[in-house]
Image (spheres, helix red, strand yellow):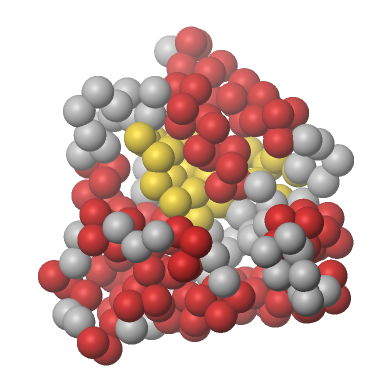
Length: 208
């Protein structure tokens, strides 16, 4: 029997990644940031290697600091439109769900199409969002120390463009469906948002 799966989707800067990681730690679940996989493929330049020979471990071995750049983010968004790449990475994500690792009670995955494409049968489907202005301010605050030249307007425009790409791509777009539980983090701290998500999952777990 497959172990429980928590799917957390939402736009960039909504806090879904941090929430997903903390939730996984809290529940004893394995965690996968699926966006990192696309960033890793963009980083290594898929044209140089046969992507089908790569494992999740290969992709996750790249230092995250090398992947958290605007350039890689833009490239990742572009390659996410490519059917062959999505097919291979979706397969890897499903393998992770099927085998989250010894000692893990289940898995938490965050991305943009986890509950709609990767694991439509996920036990918990959560959509984390926030107002664009708030998401841009969070991203700006996170990046300004490492890159003092960056401006809020640059971040805002970048996120707005990313939102548009994610919503309008033909393959696995970011969409909100009726079976999601919506968590709006606009006015909440990470801790408050985590508690809201945890209540959804823990209530379901304890009521079974």
